[in-house]
Image 1 (tube, rainbow, N blue to C red):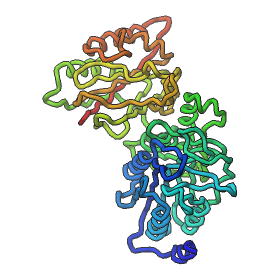
Image 2: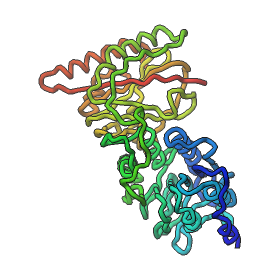
Image 3: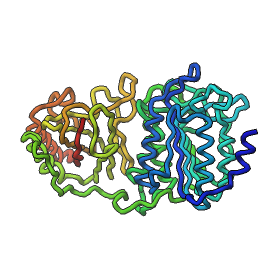
Image 4: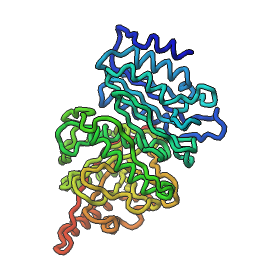
Length: 454
């Protein structure tokens, strides 16, 4: 039996021990008849790798990613043993991440489906992973599973029809699962909903109590809220009535990561540093940017902040997402000033479902989120022209209609070429709302420079 040989040498270590992570992501299950093709599993391992190296201090050589046909049974098991076991010592951090299909075996146990899931060994029982990881219980082991075990619609990560019977014991490991027992693990158009929320929590440093310690419980709270909001906006998830909540095994009070001061969640401060403009930036863009920095940036009593996925340099054709945070409840609207100075309403669009831009204090809002009114996942794709641009976030401590009413006519339908004039009109209308003795509706704003490249 091959596993007997494996376990005989599991405890062997190497002089090059240290932290290790094995990331597995499979979209292509074409070898299995009738299996769905997933949309975001391979992209998810790239997101997880960025978080490990950028936020958790893993060196690039300490992280191994197996995608699609590289994630077959032999590769998964051999790297699990060779890297996570043999190349680590007591106290080292060990991370196992899987994004792909899960299934329920005939005996009711759970299994992860490798690329060669049609083969005899291609459906790897969770008990196999548990047996191996229990051998290194003296390491700091974290298992993260963005998969389901109960089948479901095409955008759910599972292919079995039976209800799974629960995860085998993983010793001292901390275990994160995208969905609770009997639920589907949903994915959006280009990502797993769980992985997006999980990596988002680490990237923005969700820290409600401000103590600089990002705990498992704080991450779980953020992910739970994000998944619930996503499910509530998706008719198929609502109709399924199972809900969509992550499952966690471990110490909720334990610190997952200590936040460096620059990554701790703080009230947004006024942006005072000037943006370094390209020499070739057109006058129309310079003028429009001046209106943003002079008329909008000083107004941010709600502590509004905005970040973009993947950094501030994005490429044409890529999909992009944004994350907003505020210290007060209200509604968000995003406006884009492209490199020519034209102004466009990015979100919500005319296809957005109701309620998707509502914000709660200290709760990150992902944009786009949920699905459109036609039931399809929302996506923002980067388009021409290339060059410098800026995203303006407007926040109002009221409902969306109050905010959209102050927008220029036609803004949601396409770009308005005279962006500076439109922004001046918006600022005057917002100031009028704030000065109204009857309503006194407060508003805030912040902006995010970016660069589009080919």
